[in-house]
Length: 60
Picture 1 (cartoon, rainbow, N blue to C red):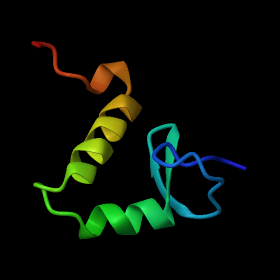
Picture 2: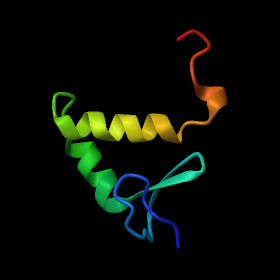
Picture 3: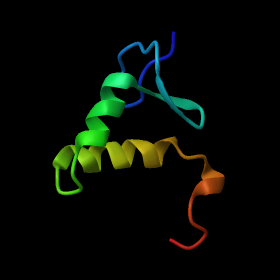
Picture 4: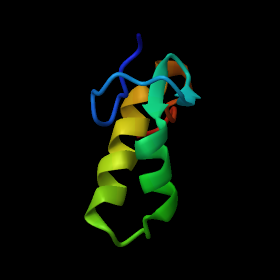
């Protein structure tokens, strides 16, 4: 069984982001967050880490 890349709990459903998985609970939490919420930055960093190297910007 796959684990959520945000909470590390086993996930039976949710959102696939490239080769990683976001569980339904974390997906729902992310959808309800505002950009000024500290958890929003946590999720954005986790998603950035999930992106393959080819998707990263060419210029830092």
